[in-house]
Image 1 (cartoon, rainbow, N blue to C red):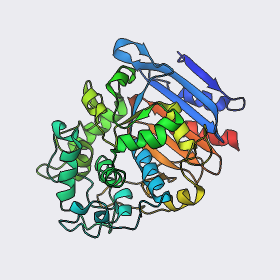
Image 2: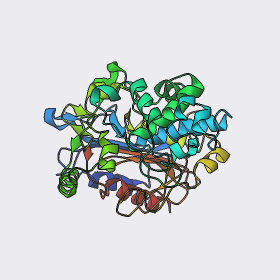
Image 3: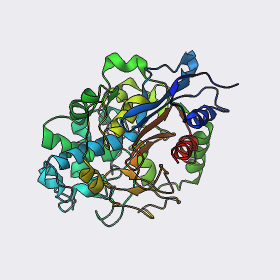
Image 4: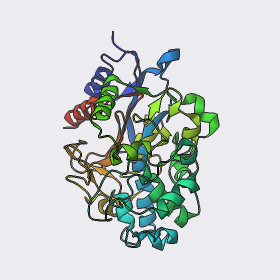
Length: 389
């Protein structure tokens, strides 16, 4: 049975709607939303399915979703804007802005190393617990004092959660505001966008319940079975932070389904938004959108020069992503419309990006989390590329 979709799509983009509808096949408990802006104008705004399968609550126009690592893209926009305003230098040592960071072999770590996953701080050496990760100063103090896991700048490994705290502390030192406050002032408020890094309690009832899909559950089981005893799996510790989060990042009432975690500022993975808001934000990085232009062309060009690609420090199977200054670039691991695209995807199937060549701001969000070979967003992007061609 086909899912009931709501919303609109511009004439000529019917195949995009069809691809969005197809993403629900075989997933009766899934909810999702899709938004696309073309040269600043809304050309697709669709939603459907269930926001909370256990209570049969439908996904509505104003449903919010955890966006996981799409949040890193938002934080990278903030950093790029500080560069544009002359307040941040990608090449500068982190300690220039955060003096306490210059310990344990980190005095030469540059801002670009934090952004491009090259700082050696992809996971905490000492496991963190849930009660610790919701307190900014606790986490930042531990990461700031930590010895890197490898020599900074010599290679990269995905900083799954720590990325946001690291660059976020630099942003806080420069602006005097928390990442969530700066994001609200610079981005969300001017665009009137329903997006937060640190969700206000009054908005919590709107958040979709994130569900672990069958392919993600199976992948987690296989990884656990293959794990060597009495050794630290740094890739796993990067995701869970040791004891703080489940391997899938969510469980009923736990992880990023926990209201306390949603309320905390966890800018590596804890952003919450509508697809409509994300598409508007990414659109505003490349073109005037509702009167807002966040980044100029020169700033975006510098921020999207590849900094990390190829095999990472830890043994992770291909395909591998490419990174600019925090932005995820087009690669075999994450295809956009073309090579000019930049943005960030998120755990379980989320994807959000801008494409200056095509003038597109794009966002797809879903609460049914599947494994890394999930093709739902990719199929929609492929359909959009065909329509634009």
